[in-house]
Image (tube, rainbow over all chains, first blue to last red; front, side):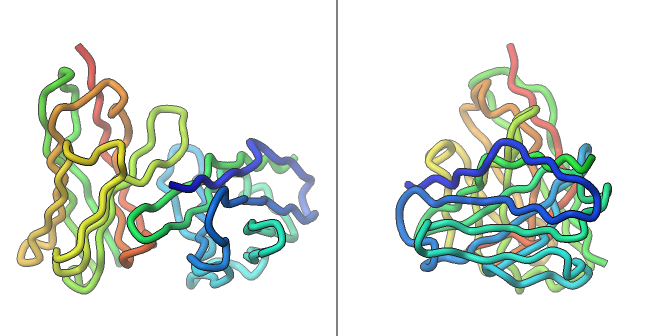
Length: 110
Length: 117
């Protein structure tokens, strides 16, 4: 089984850009799609990126996703940060029989 | 609008069983795979199990394999997870989520399961 590793926390100021990484321990990051979920305190997770770089309807284009095969990682980038973006963010991927979430990254917008 | 309502959580002793249910509305239930994902208090998300749209394909996390059983009744728009031989480490908020076979896309509000003596 593989693991997805995320930084425990990141912080940035309103209006700035932040990038959260997600590194896959084994297997190619390009083989299986990566998803990103936002979870605000006390709420259920919601999808912000699916299939590496696709935004669900209603998610602003300030959110973008990408993958980097050289580092075997995926990234979530949030531009024009707003205080409402403060939340936990989880990456997710899968293989033939298993699905895995990263440990989560707490984004603080201060 | 899409709605997923979980129920069946509660306090249970180690070794006992519990069945969670999730009733769906606002979409064509029989066209989607359904997942269960859990979150221990103060911890991250852990994928638990998935069942395909017609119930023909099922996968489990290693941590629950042999103890949990997922099923669905498309006539009732409901997905279930039967949890047997519960352990203290199964304590978590359990979310059902709509999706396809390899990812959840829309999540319910969750139901809390506490395993404690």
